[in-house]
Image (cartoon, rainbow, N blue to C red; front, side, top):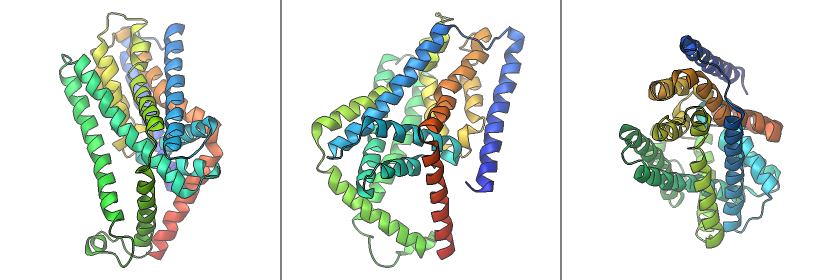
Length: 337
């Protein structure tokens, strides 16, 4: 990455760690410790393993639904590589380029890679909506936490579907010729517009492929996506309820899901401390004081830091090449513009 982006990443991680330490020391007067029983770690680690496996199967079955064959190992490297890139780039912007690069290095054509990534993204939206619908029924008496989660997920889904609908509309109309007036007003001219035209042409072929999707693998992919989203509800309850079984389940399960998807819109890599502050504001009165520091630190580890480690081990070099190539391409487009 460029020096400026590395600096932004460093400052963001410093802020994240600094806010975490501030909150930990703030709760130290309650006799809080940073340790949890082994059973809590075992359950949280198992949830991480199931989540990674479910996402890998989702990508593999999404590919099969479009008639594309990839191995489970490649699908796993794609997932973890995307996690690593998302953690070190602003607003998780490096996730999709990293996944694209990992799949391309596995020998897939660009059109095939786009089919897989678009399918994976839209399955995530619909599975997230399904999970929220179920938890909204199960925890219908939870009050503000359910309303907040539904509104956040609804907004996230609306943005993703809106972008998809807009891209679909443009792919049928603006794949050749000079940029229209609205694009000129947005300074999408020259190299920028040619890049958009190329992407729209690929998107049109991608949509044509999706229209011929195979039903059974698509259903399997959707179910795997539901498991991947749903398992995220269990990490914080596993960490807290093993030591404090009387703690209320609804906020422990539902608030973290909102934090994880809300962090996607935070411009700083890793959330820049915003996730920790939201965790404190929402759950400070729910988690027993003696467990709060440990719950915060270990929940962040099992939902964020562990994916950095796994992603670096699985596809670290590939991801860094993807990030560099993306930045070089952006610089080239800026130069042409």
